[in-house]
Structures are given as C-alpha cells and as structure tokens.
Image (tube, rainbow, N blue to C red; front, top):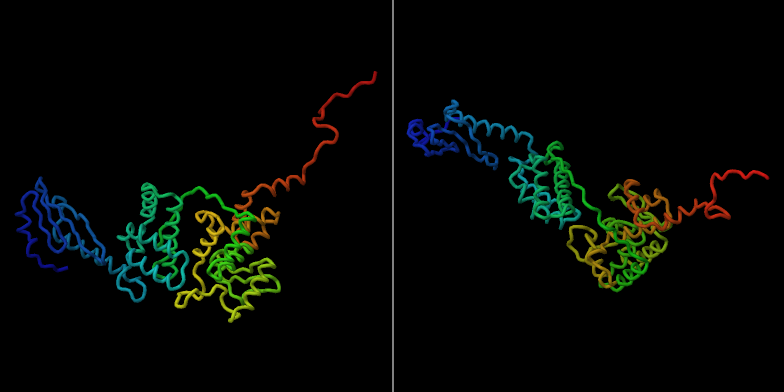
Length: 394
C-alpha cells in the first residue's frame, strides 16, 4: 500500500497539540491529554463502514501499521467476494436482499405478501439494514425479538415477524444467494394459543346464504368448498376441474403444506362442482379464475375480502371469523362425530397426528359419550357394604 500523505506526515504528528487530530486516507491520529498518540481507521469497504482503533504510539503503533490494517480489511473483503453468486460484484446487504426477495415472491405468487412486506418494511429492514445478508448473527436476531417485545409488541406478533425473517433466509439459501450455514438460528418464543372459533350449524347456513347473495359469483363456491372439505384457503384457490374425481368424490392436491395428497369431499360438494363445471364455457382449468386479466397468477390470489363481506352479511364477527375458521369448523365437526384421528388426518391433510390432537380438546361431548361405554354400575345398591364380616349362625 503506497499512499501519499500531504497532511498526516511524521512532522505533523510530532507537532500535534493535546486534543488535536489529523485525518487523511481514512486514518485518524489523535493526541490525548497525556501526550500519547492514538491511531484509528474509518473507511468504507464493500459498502460497509469499518471503524477500528489500531492502537497507541506508546504500544509501538505507527501510521504504517494503520495503513497495513486498512489493506488487510480490503484483502479480507476481496477474499469474501470469491464465493459471490454469479453476476454479483459485491455481497447483498439486508435491505437489497429484502427488496429482491419481495420482488421474486411477488412474481412467483408468494403467500401472505402483504404481511411479509409490512414486516420487512416497517421492522426488519430498519433494524438489520446495516448487515450483509450472509453475516446476520444469531445474537442480533435475539436482540431484535427482545427489543420488539420491550417496545410493546405481543409475542405472537414478534413470532410472525420472525417467521418472515426465517422464510427470507431459507429462500435465499434455496436460491443460492447465501450458504445454508450463513443462516442465523431463529427461535420463536412461546405464545398463548388463541381461542379457536367454531361455527355452529346455524352460523354455517347463514354464511352460505350470505355468500349466495354476494356480488362475486365465486364467493358461494369458495365457502361451500371450505365448509365441506376442511381445505386451506390457498389450496381451495388452486383447485383445477381436471383434478376432481367426481366418481369417487376426491380432489387431487398437488401443492399442499404437508405435500401432495388426495382430498376427500362430501357428495353434495362433488355435485355442486360438477354442475359448476357443466355451466362453464371452459370446462377445465382453475375453478377460481382471476376476477380481471393481467394478474400475476392464473387463479385468484385471495378470497379474503369476499369472505369478510359474507361474514358481515351473515351477522358474524369479521374480527373472529376468517376463512381458516371454516377449516377449524370442519375438523372439529369430525371430532364431535367420533371419527378416528387417522381418518381425520387424511381429510385435513395435517402432517402429523399431534396436530390433529389440538382439535380434540375443543369439545367434550364425544368424550362424555365415549366414557359412557365403560360405565358399570352396581345393581340393587347405591353404596355397597365392603369387607363386611360374615354373620355367624345362632
């Protein structure tokens, strides 16, 4: 490293008064009140600020050592660029990675984009913007979570933000933007489970009637499928007519949370779908076609607004009744009917039985019925006399 110094010369350093400082080429020399001289560097390398105290003159540190320190930082940065993805000259910082992540998900039809964008724009990017995406330490994630809770955010809210952060890093690793080992550990904290809302039969009928009167001609079909299949919101929207087996009342689900599966449906729903197919000009393709052309997806991205209108029209609480409530209702109804858990798992598409067990505690009526099967009473006595000594004959 051969820098030319006009101000930071040896003569100028010797002439520095107490409290005086000289800065040139990112090197700062400061004379303290005790007469000692401190060397520090402050430079930008790969768009990151590097600020380090190199040492004091009394420790044998000189300007040349500060120069060598800067060169060492730059050499390390060059070495770090050797594993850059193809086409990049520098590493992404967090803000750049977040912008590209959101853009890529938007084009490919990512889920929960509104929430992901809000989490990143409002909270995650402002906090992590100074980090390279491949160098976010675990302790920074832990500090972020504690900071958000201290600021008044609920643990459930923080966990949703951490879920976005986790998906962000996992996606970058899958796209080869970072290595798997570059991902920080992200641990969510315990949060109290929300009360699961279940619709009564009267509520289900009211919701269905409200959907039939909605201005969107697909609203009633969305609710009919949700109540008669226990399918998730996104799974319903991705159904194609050619994936329905009307003879056996099954829907093939190629893309689901727990992998592809065959979804059983009720006979009445099968008839509804068959009639709907016969009335369509195009008998194949997605059931829930986009409401207008030019969308990023070949099917509806969401039916949340339509569902909310139907909920309000049915006299239900839109803050509690969401599309997922239809899934909760269907699964809980199966539990109440005494259906065995492995069968419920096949219908619900849950990955494990443990996840199905969450619904068992929602109702006790089927448990009371079951325990009645082993009810054994005593004939002719309410409180029998136990261990009575035998009476002796006179």
